Amino acid sequence: MNTDRVFIDNLEIETVIGIYDWEREIRQKVSLTLEMDTDVARAAVTDDIADALDYKAVAKRLIQFVGDSSFQLVETLGERCAEIVLDEFPVSWIRLRLDKPGAVRGSRSVGIVIERSKRKTEAG
Image (cartoon, rainbow, N blue to C red; front, top):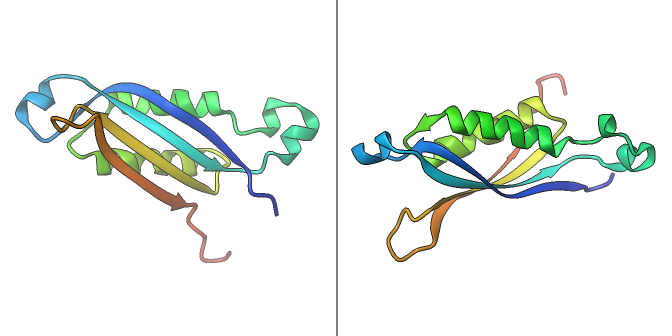
């Protein structure tokens, strides 16, 4: 079995995120970096986007979701993003890094890194 990864690096999106009242009234930039496990062998042979993980479609879906969201915690936002990718795209595993720049004075960024796998069905 091949271990292939498709990545999206530093996808910047503005959203409402945070626990403080002032954060609920503004939009802040977050950044997503994704590493996604998918089989690229067929796409490499056919040279056809229909056989590949369409990273532009993944990015557009996350831009829409994150842009429309309003979570308090980066943990919740990151978890929902991982669920979307696993549920809607041909991805079996994801590593997602979510950065919230400027959240802590003196630090360039804070955030989370999570790894999730597609849930196995009871039959398989």
